[in-house]
Image (cartoon, rainbow, N blue to C red):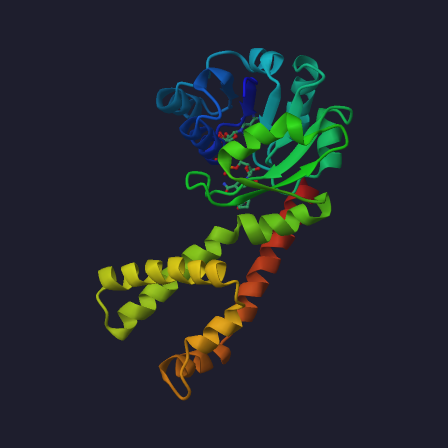
Length: 268
Ligand SMILES: NC(=O)C1=CN([C@@H]2O[C@H](COP(=O)(O)OP(=O)(O)OC[C@H]3O[C@@H](n4cnc5c(N)ncnc54)[C@H](OP(=O)(O)O)[C@@H]3O)[C@@H](O)[C@H]2O)C=CC1
Ligand SMILES: O=C(O)[C@@H]1CCC=N1
């Protein structure tokens, strides 16, 4: 990929994307420029990744084939839109990773005739796992952006109406797994196992259970049946879990995250 890419906003997510693209070799540092109102972030990105943080935003926008909007939903997108309209070439694509902000809103800010792609990246960028959810605006094409997007995760193209759900469920998704592993490890420690052993067992169980599901193609209920002998240990544990708020609590949490995604866009 030979495109020039300009990031507006060089925060946590922009850094994660840059790091993954450089590590995977899909981009070189000379292709990337970043502008940010936070001078400390620019210095850090320059020192760690040798990307261009010294050109002005105007220069970065003029040269860019792809413009990544990586500020927060609460930031001033209207002012950014005015600058992009002024400096960027008409065919340069806007790739917005801003949670909740719709393609129609992005069109109002950056120009509805421009290629606009709404992406919600996963924070598992360094691992090769994790899907970005991608909705293409009317003037955008997969060919223009896919080489870039595949540099920091797998890609699911979605109808835009699914993107907020994808955000609260899939992209906030590692939260639930981290939380589960922490809670599960604590359960082992509560029962009396040293933390180091409990931690190793928790991670191994997580990896092994996913591998079992992928290798066998079985439904979790079928594997639960294999894992529990009649009147045995596992079934007694599951009975307590059935009596808890575990499933509904998790599902309420996802619904709250989806709702908040939509709210962030509306507030913008
Ligand atoms: N982190 C995550 O897990 C994910 C985040 N996202 C989305 O990515 C976007 C960025 O999130 P994240 O990286 O966590 O946020 P950060 O706060 O780490 O980064 C945003 C950066 O943009 C800067 N900024 C604010 N306004 C402007 C401006 N007008 N011009 C240039 N730079 C500006 C901020 O500076 P300052 O701090 O000084 O205001 C900050 O350095 C958000 O929209 C979020 O919804 C999407 C998927 C996952
Ligand atoms: O918490 C956030 O706002 C971002 C979007 C989804 C996951 N992280």
